[in-house]
Image (cartoon, rainbow, N blue to C red):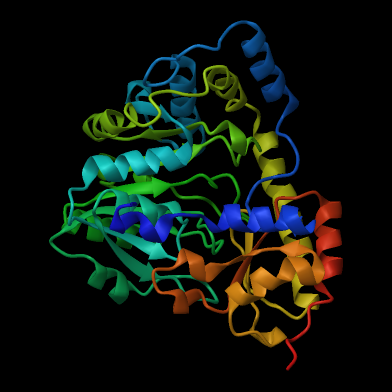
Amino acid sequence: MLVERMRPHTSTIFAEMSALAVRTGAINLGQGFPDTDGPASLLDDAAANIRAGINQYPPGVGVAELRTAVAAHQRRFYGLEVDPDAVLVTTGATEAIASAVLALCEPGDEVVTFQPYYDSYAATIALAGAVLRPVPLRPPTFGFDPDELRAAFSARTRVVLVNTPHNPTGAVFDREQLTFIGELAAEHGAVVVTDEVYEHMVYDGRAHVPMATLPGMAERTLTISSVGKTFSVTGWKVGWVHGPAELVAAVRAVKQFLTYVSGAPFQPAIATALALPDSFYGQLAADLQRKRDLLSAGLRSAGFTVFDTAGTYFVVTDVRPLGYADGAEFCWSLPERVGVAAVPVSVFCADPELGRPLVRFAFCKRDEVLAAAVERLVAVRAPTG
């Protein structure tokens, strides 16, 4: 009975692989969630808010403290001047992205994005009746070909959906790449929707560049982020979007009929946490960079080709040196064979061949968990027969 456009999206690889990990007792390096809690002050504030009775509907746009804190965060880290009244609190970044696409796209409009992509992108575009125009990111650097990107635009392009730092590849788009994307968007009158949830997880001295900081782009960009990754509270599902007032109003018109509101006791706690000192944010990136290096070295020792990770929680590998041609086949067998779960990159692609031999591992886990996973992965061998 499901409508045809949603039939390819009846399940997510994260749910499937996490269930397989539980069933087999495997170490779950598939789904990108930490196995430790965030700052104690944040948890204590949220618990105190619950006990204080902050448990009913918050304002539809989000509590004022959080909207003000988001604006202060953008000014502090990026020099962006954001009106708190132009910040909309959402149920995670996923709802913000869905609301933006649904608000801006009529059936038949086109959305340009990069593949592989976070799996909700394709589902949301289908839900809107819009057309996905994917542009490939290829190893080893997972950059894009400017000619392929230009060819993806047309008179029907309505939205450009940009994710940087990029899930699943770990790429971080630089200023030159983002400028080219922005120029094409402006040329075609498209709105840029940016998913920046990994903004504080960039490594080796790199910097995250928000699209809205580029000349002329603030007026056509919806900037989206969330608290889940930065503060290790992915289950709280609190995010936000900001941008020009008329675009945010369009997103709000849709968002209010999805969840309406959520996270009442969490929102003021997050507002306080966003003001944590620079040392918190610096330590977050340093700890994750060390975990990246630990897992990457172990995967190389096990025989994988490992691509460099510039940001996010994820390392992408090629399994062909191990004798496998298909990353999905590899991932489905891995939990039972060696007790580790990962996800195939092909499921994040409109063209599965683009990611066929690639597998993504998450390193946002305790060191001892990563070490145990590496020890198990050494047992990976080429298939026989």
